[in-house]
Image 1: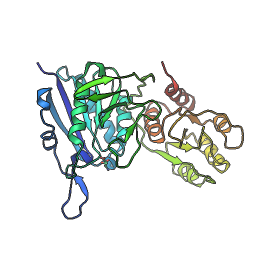
Image 2: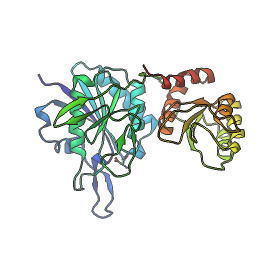
Image 3: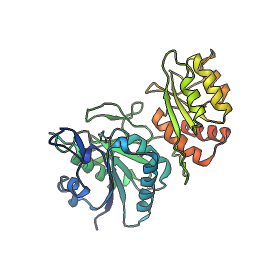
Image 4: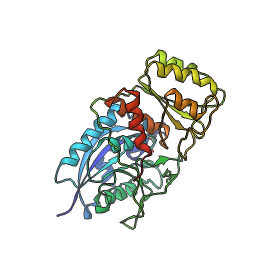
Length: 331
Ligand code: ASP
């Protein structure tokens, strides 16, 4: 008997065609339309197709991601399903993939894919990405690796990968570590395992009201003060370098923490970890002393997803700090 893969379609460019009048892409293709373009896939597997939504990536919300997570969890529990593939817009694919990684508990492969070119374009990469994602979901070595992202024949871990290019097919990169493996002539090959601890932040009550702010030279506290005034549930700040901010931001950060609003710090640099190495006003040490939570090497958008889920578990600053410390753990 052939193994069975559930393919859940959420939308994105992989489901889009060009409108003849506007010449702009919108989602028009159903799961059946898209799968009919993945020739010979039935020689490898039986598929179950699920139309979850038909939205572009930027219309995906944390609430919809949570609803998707529940569908994935339910499918993973079905004994006749061997693996799960999800199609998604590439713009924020890494956010949904990371949320699934943190919330779905299964050893079965869960693979997220999409495409950079729509179905009206020459060289539409949807079918090849779907084929590689399905082959990855079928492979024994994909089990227990957490959520995977497969595009352009590269297999990456949701924890590590980010979209790096606005139009290249070779856009999804684990910048610090390289891919986990590749799909080569229909063969799935792994080169390495991710050594990051597999973290689960399962909660029924994700708190999505979390802001993300990018730091730039000379910034003051007005944006943060506004967020405190609005009683935002939490904020992630993309600081500079090792984790520093201009001194003008310190009063706002202290103000937020005094109001029990957790402030999570990441770096606006794409590579490297945070460290409280600098002792000047706004330096990492002053941020740490103020109670800012350092989020290791997560990028801003992923740290925001983690904070939304963590806030569903606890609002206590010490407990949140301990939860975020786990992201630094490697085995
Ligand atoms: N803007 C598109 C989306 O995220 C890009 C893509 O799918 O590649 O839906």
